Image (cartoon, rainbow, N blue to C red; front, side, top):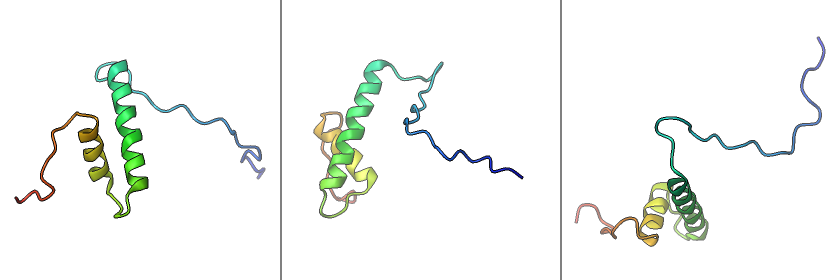
Length: 76
């Protein structure tokens, strides 16, 4: 049986999947999502305590003015 695996894999990055049709994001929503994603990744990288993804996104949303600050203890 011949080897069908490509010995020269593509170096071109694959295009990210974007939803189309109903439920697709507007250009403004895509830009906001990209900003939120970038800031959350930076916060996680800079975190000494090791922020979770959820914590980093929540903090990024507060920093971007999308969410009001919340108490750090949800039981308080």
